[in-house]
Image (cartoon, rainbow, N blue to C red; front, side, top):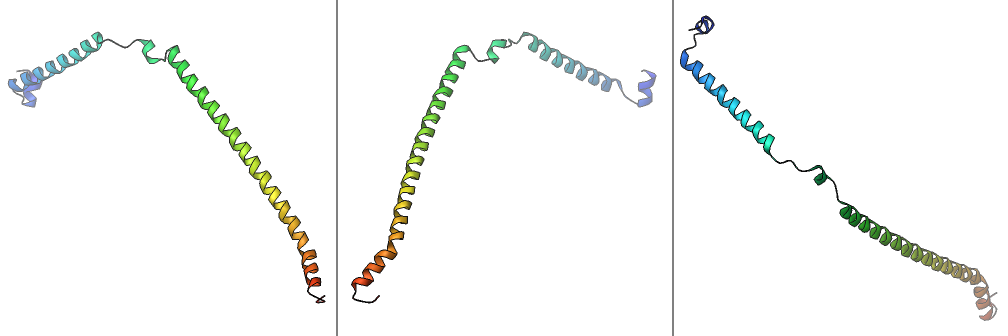
Length: 115
């Protein structure tokens, strides 16, 4: 036995088992490295979109943009129409309210001398 191992009180069987375990670990690491070496890697082109795919996405985006623009125009037109109607109704109510006192006075005159 070696003097260092004798001081540690390690027997030959333990040393052999340790060497076998280390050899198995090295073989496993070698197999992993060998597999990585021969595994087919995807080409760099596989990571990027093709021109046809880009064109299809651009067409979809353009269609969505057109749809949103049409929707915005429709909503804007509807809002303008509603605002115009609301202002017209407010003007009509203002005229009706301004005419109330004269109608009330006329009605009271017609009731024979209450005024």
